[in-house]
Amino acid sequence: MNNTVPLTKYGAALLKDELHQLKTKERRSVIEAIAEARSHGDLSENAEYDAAKERQAFVEGRISELEGKLSSAQIIDPATLDAEGRVVFASTVDLEDLENGQKVTYQIVGLDEADLKLNKISVTSPISRALIGKYAGDVVEVQAPSGPREYEILEVKYI
Image (tube, rainbow, N blue to C red; front, top):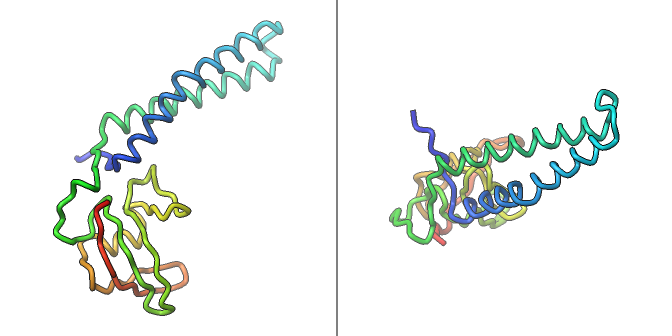
């Protein structure tokens, strides 16, 4: 079974930054909060202590999750791709909605780095699944919540 996590070079850097932040700042602040709460005495009815322990569990869980993803990551630099014009993971795709003529650009990224505000869509999204393997000039049909939509692929870039 293939357990690799595809990440763009940018996405891997974001996860590494978050991991560094959690290990160097968050962990320290949680330890200080636990020590402060302990100094207030009885732990059985200490809401601050309970909250700090809960935060500690979250931070440690996220650290573990990030370390696991990064250790099994397949980091892909879009600038080094040579997919011969085909839409692949990490490629940037210019599309035109054939119904209304609206143009949009998306980069296909890993689940952890997907952000629609930045036009980064998950490789598992319906539009990504429809685009993978296609070329500029191809028309794809995407099953959107509002019904099927057709897009023409205008350009495929590896940037």
